[in-house]
Image (tube, rainbow over all chains, first blue to last red; front, side, top):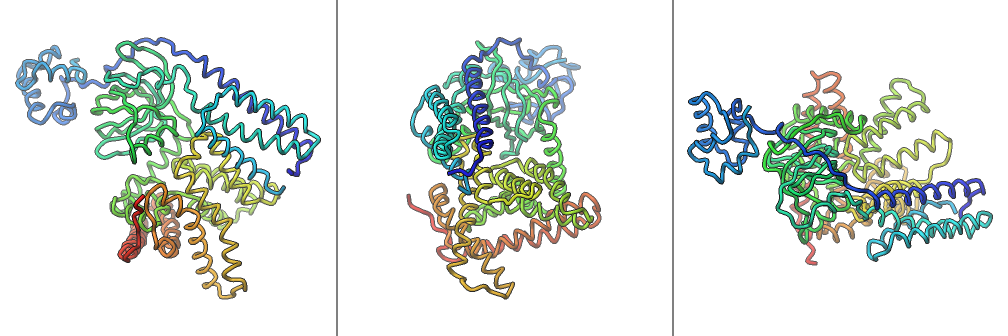
Length: 109
Length: 472
């Protein structure tokens, strides 16, 4: 059927044996893999700093349109900057619900 | 037997198909595979017994590979997170596919390393598809933390096909990011360095195409040369799909062949000996394969080209049928689910039908040799198009519900033009890299050729009944 020499057949047997052993080992590793507990991930890097963000950057945050971005900038100019994120609640147009949505996207440094 | 790989590949595929439709225990298949291996060892001196054992073993290995692929480890994200969840998760991982624009946002594939939710804080594995509402300038190999809600791909019809496509690529979850602020970039020290190099090179070449060419021709040239189909204008994509020439927009064996030809001609001009021309072209075609995203048709043609070149270097006689089968086996061993991928099926159906049907059609229609070279070229081009069309029309009708009656004529006219566009495109890129002042001239020539190709397709689509929508 296959015109193979005995040496070529031995090579095929060796390679298929490797595949079978590898598949078995792979299966055992998969079945015994465990998800280990890890330290909490920090996500501050991606938050927008309210004290130096420009209007365009503010408008890219979900829930902030052109008018609200301008009000945030006006507030920052008027008060000399944000001391805490909660100060956002004092800006017209930011209700409790909207603040809850925004607080994950912004930070004060 | 002259073509042993053919039988082994067919047997391997049958094993995959069987397991895809029947539930089978991994351990049971493994035990049978070991038994047949013992049988092959027992029949080492008996050629028939050995062949039967090895073919059966190939069948069982196909089944074993697919079953193994579908078993998810305990730390896989699909096993850690329940099917229905509205919770937001933080996921740390590596971008493993170059991010692509999607509408006004960005799409990319992330290999998960860690998952964090309200009640979950674990190391994990697996891949997820990420859609961001914003355009983000991420790169292959970057390690990031993303924040968003996870959902599983679902739906019927087109959406069901998309889910199958994602599952076959090992993607079980999709994460939607509301904005670019849902991504925290940790650095780009991860990823395969050679792949990083090819991704960087591709970005540079893409930048040159869009710098010198207008939007629509630039999108088409980007697809033809670099395989980036998402930037092709919708109307051009639709025209070419309906006329049966959409394969021009996918980097395939045709393009790899042209790349080998260009490299060979360039090295010949430099007086490089024939042997070394082939040696140098080997790493270059592998680079081109990675550059274009290593899709199934490119991998198939790259493996075939590598086999042919290696056969030449080893002074062995290459067999096209064996090389096609070896290419299929190479792809299926890496991912057995690819057997059900439309791109895989169309690629192998077209090349197999050209290899099998073209010489028979030529013998049947032109029994006497023709001396006029232009006529021979025309007949050959036509017969290759007919062979490819016959091999793929059934699959196209089944998957896309369309039947193009002008496909043969369209391919006869468009394929030579596409070859010209590819050659002109590579010349333009070489000019833009080495001697930028002439690049705008080459760019204009490319635009003329591309608009001619689009106009030809539009003209053919005006023929009544050019593309039939199938009712089933």
